[in-house]
Length: 165
Image 1 (cartoon, rainbow, N blue to C red):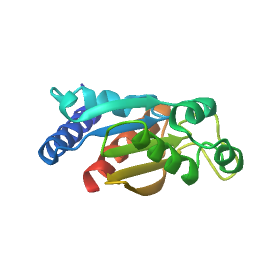
Image 2: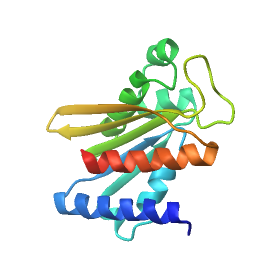
Image 3: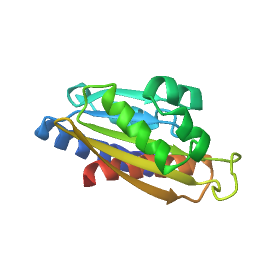
Image 4: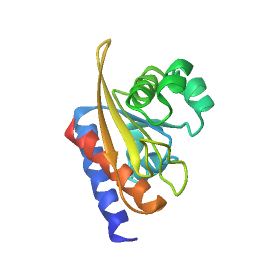
């Protein structure tokens, strides 16, 4: 296990202890990380007590079908946008019994960059259910490095955001 992997595991374990204590459950909605956040979380023994499920919605069609992201949002703003990550996070909560959702969408590279959205552009979103209301917080990050590095940094930021809620 690399130092980076060990750090991710420690973050996930800390999050798991907190979620267990709070009796909360988390759901993931991932695009550019391809399920890596869910993997890190479920690597923790006992995660079934606080992890409900994960959605890997890599294609736009999958975001629409699995998470209910409006086609108009994708057409107007693109898959890598604040509007899309907000819809992904809200959709994950609506389609699960979780209290908290984390969503990520971005350009990990090496290709995929478009004007205004270079490789390393990642939108993260965290949604929290309070009764019927949903509160969503988003963050734009621009990570440097190769594909694996961008994805790893995205996972770390997603976990840190869950802990900071």
